[in-house]
Image 1 (cartoon, rainbow over the protein chains, first blue to last red):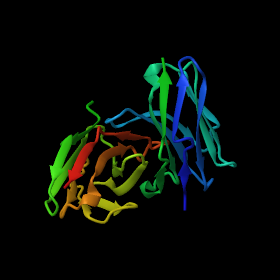
Image 2: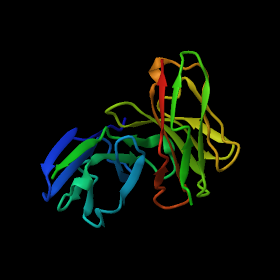
Image 3: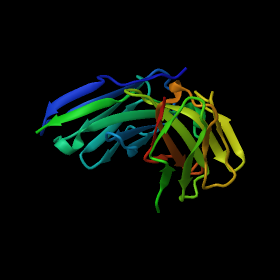
Image 4: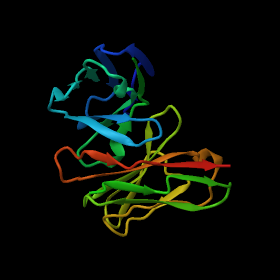
Length: 114
Length: 114
């Protein structure tokens, strides 16, 4: 059974630092992995999606990497800003068509101190 | 496009009451999903649909029912509300014909059962 873990559960860093959020999964047979941002009391906003055949994706100050063999993905945030404060979730899809095989991690709550 | 919309935003129910959470998407997506998110946790899949007239159970379907009579709408029904159903409910949709099948989320419905 696929399990997705995000450690740490919470992280606080000063503004301007580069940081890495981690996501690990137990079954390497994934179709894709998606990173989301969730602001308090809000829904999920998709940040980056990496297909299983890809190694990384970039959007602005965000870079997500995927290493299927080790069951890991990282979300790198460059030059962090207070507006980056949110909870970041990763989700793994097990196959192209099976909606039942989408597993979420419990998230990392990120706080950027001004 | 409005994307994925959900109503109501908030609701308080008494034990044993019933209600329907509404979800509509205007992106002509064939896949739709219902998740619940408990405090400090990731999302768990309740039910999903791969097209009008087709629904299937996710990880935590007990106590819920769904229907998919149109492509746009995917309501979630609670028949006998229980305190264990206190949670935030998210609806999502995706284009199952797209290579990445990326999910798009609604803003959520915060439900409290007392």
